[in-house]
Length: 154
Image (cartoon, rainbow, N blue to C red; front, top):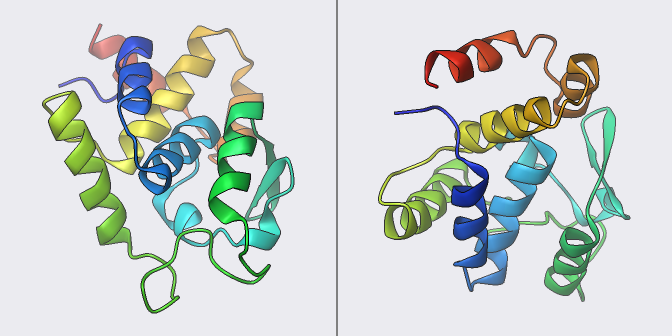
């Protein structure tokens, strides 16, 4: 199985999810290339047309900004963007369950948060974005393993 999704697969997956929270989880993972750990630690105060992830700020698309605003209205700045019923940050396991539920139903295969990160990296690479810029955006010092995996599976 290839370690990333095609542009058609990612579009199909995003457009087929009706639940705002679930769609937002998938879109943030794909659009920012953030890791699962980074995703579960995003707080409302970290978002303002960009998302602050660790020591970097990532610009979001207009569509993603609107979706975040819709989802996070009436929330306090210190709240986690994705929280459990007890108002703690959502568990990593729950994120994986959400991804499996939708990818299994829509794509007939399970994906991981790292699949979405790899997809982001490969799509940026195919769009001829400079490697150093991609590395800075996703917070990885060396994206070569992702690129090698892409060429091995073509």
